[in-house]
Amino acid sequence: MLVRWMLGLGLVMLIAAACAGPYGKITEMASPTVVGDSFRTVVVIAADDDQNSLQITAKVRQQLNDGGVTALRRSGMWSIERDALADICPLGEASNIHGLLFVLWDTLSLYDCRTHKPAYQIRGGMRGTDAMVKRLLAFLRVPGD
Image (tube, rainbow, N blue to C red; front, top):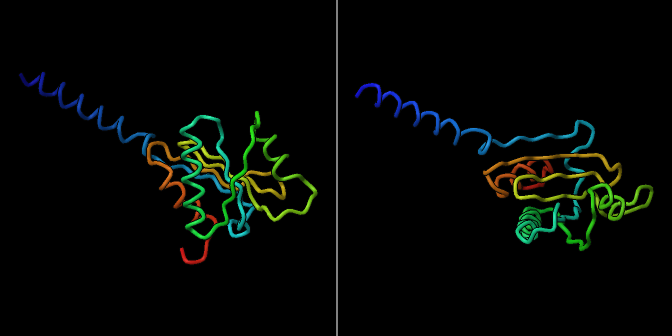
């Protein structure tokens, strides 16, 4: 009886540890050379063509607009992020677009349009886009946050 109880307890602890693992963890990477408050106008696009990604992208765009960032929509299909960057943010040309944000259900990746370098990336696992957008807005240092 005691052995069954110990095995049951061990199983419960193992399941609890698995649930609290990387699925709920948020990881952020910010560029040391690109400052967040330089992004005022950002194009927000889905990182893939899945219908759910397109809906999540629209929600993220609205949250950024509500948070004080000018978040724009841009239609198009690109095979890789580099192609989207070259099309939306041509190097060497003056532009009023400061950044390009790629959206997946668990990742937001912001690129600097002036340099095409990654400025910020956040992976939220199962925490959702609301938590990721909140942290992105903190990186962008939007007045009033």
